[in-house]
Length: 112
Image 1 (cartoon, rainbow, N blue to C red):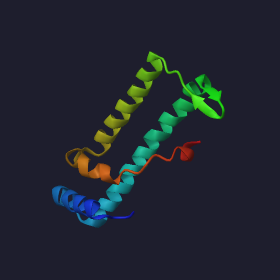
Image 2: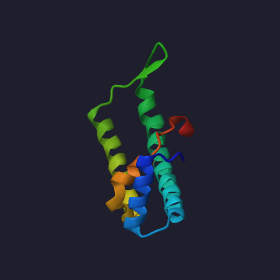
Image 3: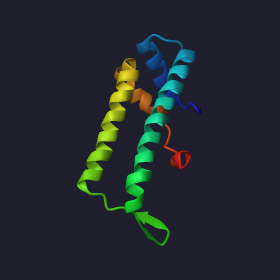
Image 4: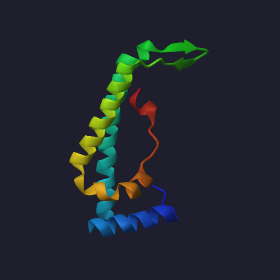
């Protein structure tokens, strides 16, 4: 994990607010990211099973026409995932802005 000045300051604020050492923050961050991966895996599984078959392939690019039900279900997955994170890591609610600096891009290939 590359640490730039902004992330270093965020780590200091997080550790201060949570009253934990940096090593414990690293462990907490790993567990948090594992939970995010678990949530993303379920969402991608749904998309592969129910959204992908609705895609149209045009010149190798998949296009989707999501209906209101599809959008509502995806929004439900998002809300459920956010609730799971809040329930699993209630102590992180106060430091979410700083924590978001450590979220990586989703590697969709990981779930394919």
